[in-house]
Amino acid sequence: MIGPGKKHSVLAGALTAVAGFVLLFALVRVARPKAASAAGTRKAAHKLDPRLKGAYRFDKAGWIYVHLQGSPSDIGFQHGYLLAPEIEDAFQAIKLNDTHGSGKSWEFFRQAARNMLWPKIDSEYQHELEGIVAGLKAHGVENMDLDDVVALNAFEELPDYYVPWYDAQHKVAENIKPSGHCSAFVATGDWTRNHQIVMAHNAWTSYLEGERWRIIFDIEPTHGYRILMDGFPGVITSDDDFGVNSAGLMITETTITGFKGWNPNGIPEFERSRKAMQYASSIDQYVRIMLDGNNGGYANDWLLGDRKTGEIARFEEGLKHWRVWRTKNGYYVSSNFPSDPLVMKDETDFNPNDLSSSPNARHIRWKQLMKQYKGRIDVMLAEKFLADHYDTYLKKFRPDARTLDGHVDLSAHGVASWDWGPYFPGGAIQGKAIDSQMAKGMTFYARRGHPDGMNFYVKPFLRAHPQYDWQAPVLRNMIAGPWTLFRAGERD
Image 1 (cartoon, rainbow, N blue to C red):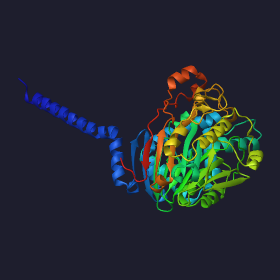
Image 2: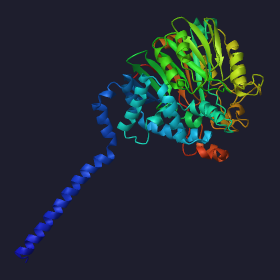
Image 3: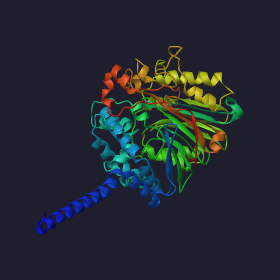
């Protein structure tokens, strides 16, 4: 028999236990949403934050389609918030690539972004970049600030253009060579089916970067023209570059091999190319915006088409020299070779007579295809061209560093003019194609991964080529998707 005192003690103990259980249950109830529902919190933020109004993303055929709209700061916030996981991941890859290739610390690039680039950026794009940082923070990304985001946006120009200039100024014995990027053409008039403009482009880069180059941006800004372009997470311009705006301007490019030049007082190329895509309604306007404040970064041959007039152009932009070719009946091809004698002589170390080099071999192949298919060129043929495997130096079909669909990872010779050694994991990483009619409706076809449909697998590659083990933490399988149509305003 339990006495009154003991009875009271047992009851109190039972009540304490129950209270403890209730408290524990309450804590678990509170803690679980906190740990498990970061996504739920972000969903709530998406519904409540007015800066996200009208913005959305969805996956399609290996791409991430993102619609952004509104003021510069709203567009930036939407970009940073909706693509936060991809931006954080891309940032780690770029950080590794830039520091390994240049021998510089990431703080070196942050300082360049802060002290040299940021003061030259128009307030419109400063607000957009600040918006990206705010969006990242709202999504829970705490390890990136404004300097990081600006340096990420300049990942094509700081390592390959600024660093060689900086080293020369400081008498540092480095010999960094800008990587070549891309194969492209634009044609019109008698050269195409229905005499309309046809443009196509495949981006070339390292697979480390290229596997992440999978965003389709649909940007509807308060000011300027609507843009549909492919792009890289966290970067405000296309950067590889391919896009169309609502004024009917069609835009792409390839880089100039062996280019040397930098103006520290110029405007970053990533801003000028975004501004030109957003505000130019003609070839002349595009050229004018790109030349204004030219810093020499990411020196390109731009291929342009104006749907309204049927005119196409090749705009070669060095730092000291530039030139525009234009026609309403013809074609321009591009594969990392300069065409203007002054640009070639004064601003590059390019050798046009080395037929074994990737730029020259692809140049020859482009001309062969244009001649062979004159009068029949359309988007379907353009897709076929981008997947082409004919090596004009060896005179045989085989995927390698000299074919339009580049596979440097299969090439014992690499690409010496870009410092891509034997079997470097790089080459064509996606393809896009458009014609005048598609430009009118702001649509284009895109294929993620190699345009020929071949896949790249990391484990067997690194087993065969351990010299690239330094990329292992961030190098990924690159799986080709199908050719897929994208359009402005598209929803899942």
